Length: 297
Image: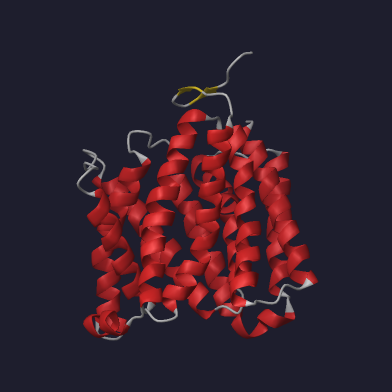
């Protein structure tokens, strides 16, 4: 049997360990939406982010060196992730009527990455990717017309903005193979700490007071987001990328919003309407088309 080749060498046969690790990754990412919701119910957004990034840096910095000559790249990545992706994501989850809907909206990040690569790098998408873009964005528009979301449309728009900055991040890290995934997580977090705590000092309640009053559940939520989602899940994902081709892995990530919706409906007793289900299927179909076409390009 001929082995396919990943960017890091020949891939390994897909076995029980691969499926077990993937199941763990997707479950950790799905449950992260619950962890974030629990944390921002008590922590203001920027304080929560500052604490999250601090935990990540404290745990990773002893093991991850700063990549030489990459300060500008990491600064741009941090700008896309911290005020852009994470800032808008935490705010949208704090103010939404449906965390599950936000988890679906975030999936259009790859669509934005395709658009940005098209605009700035002349990376012209083929007919499959263009079709996926149209289908995915139609699904988002359809989701916005769900009547139960009319009072929190600003949260859905913020979620869409978060997806845009995730797409920006995907474009920024393209070709940055000299920076390891854990280095990106560690040092983009480190660069984001001053901004996060600066915003907290300017806009939110005094940080010491917030930290003292926060419940154990909120602390556990932030710790989960930092350790389980950012370090363990993303670190394991980087390991999987070294074992298996992206053509196998990328389409599987569409399992995450399905698990996230199921989890949020179960934990928060969120309504799951037929309108939401149809919109979610449309979005995931469009993103699946983009993901598969990119994987096999």
